[in-house]
Image (cartoon, rainbow, N blue to C red; front, side, top):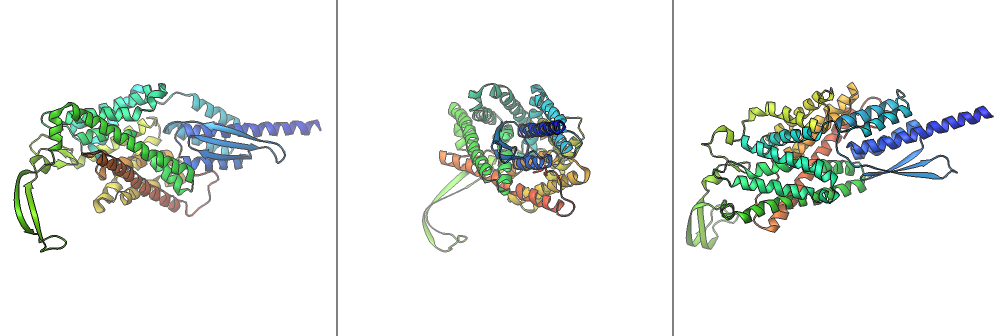
Length: 490
């Protein structure tokens, strides 16, 4: 009888260890940016395989864990709360531990200790390195997607470095400043960009600098995750996130408006030049009755004043919202198309490192290769189908989804971490195809319509990416054996 009681106590202790492992796993997945629509399925699969008898309810930034010992004993409820951002190396290690525990290659106690070590470890790179990575990422995306020149890329890189420093230092230490962090940095970037765009010579581009300087704080990844949650029938989390992202985008656009208008208020010459920029030159006016031959209803007489004119020299040489004089040297013009062959891999590498991927890992070249293939597909589809950001984004997402899921199924790698850089790259590409982040407006109604149009463009891109990712996943896992653990991908 004593032997049976000791065995039962040992089994009970083992079950408690497995449940503690599940709690640590839930905290690690939320802390390092795992796709929220996959967290619940991963935890349910782990609970079933480990026999932990636990139920999970996933809400934004919190997981409710309900543990039941038997039908007669009371149920214990735990609240696991964590907020964080994507950390690719640590997320890959967490998934490896998850997979080893579920395949009996590691005990639950060893897995819990390993997860505790990961959670207590410092970030992969210090603050100074992350600011340098933000500088290179913003500089490269300025010339790749927003038509910036060499001088524009350095200014946008400096703005992104300041933005990164404020976000990781000041905003993380002060909860009061964290509430106005996005608005404050967008005001600073817009003020600097508008001031430089009015410098003598017009060599700086407001649209390129402000778009590239603030693109890193756009909620593109949040909108993508919300679209994936809605597609997975997780209506509560998906609707909350997508409403938050839309309102966040409006705040960001409002901050850009304040920064730009504040400079125009200070500099009277810049304000006059701004409102006169779209006015045609050499206007002539004629008064009388006119017959429009090419209207929808031709040969109907119209009486009034008819004004005609030719576009100004500035308007004739606008490239992606920026004035580019043909007589300028190459340093003040957009870079030629062939530079994308080395700029895109460098940008993808910097973005992966900025998402805390270790530079010595074998995953890094895989991420770069997948992201470059996705971007090439995106560019090709945009040539065939211009002004269709949803279909173009779906094509790029389909390619990276095929590559990532095939890499996970055939080689055994982690699909999500190998795909996340390329998927996030599709968001600024889609925004740039729709006209960039900032557009000119002359009234408050135009300002808010511009903010809504930006949010709708991001939703359009996220919808296309969602369809492409799900279709590619279905094709890869259409045949073959079923996975024991939950699928860790988008």
